[in-house]
Length: 98
Image (cartoon, rainbow, N blue to C red; front, side, top):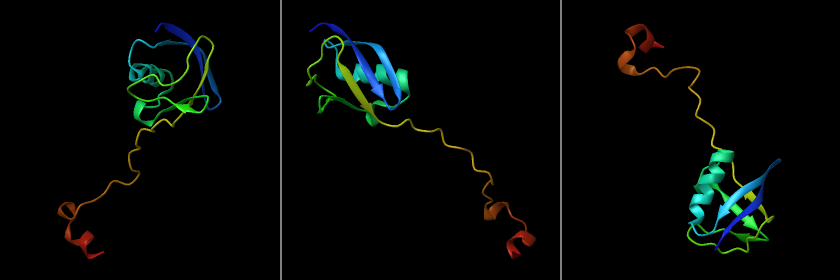
């Protein structure tokens, strides 16, 4: 199967010229989408005409100009807590009394 140029819609964002090589595994395409959007491959759902793309085979009709819908959210980097936890081992007697 050859290479195609498709359009990927993700929320309000559009990626008009995304290369898809159907000779390679779909996980490589999902890795390419990860590079574009920051959505990790295991959190992605790629749809085309109601068909969900499998991780191990191309089970959807793809040709030049096909519109693919990407569903998934970017994981936010965990924030450092505002107040650091204080352990009993680190407290003095006056703090333990509280």
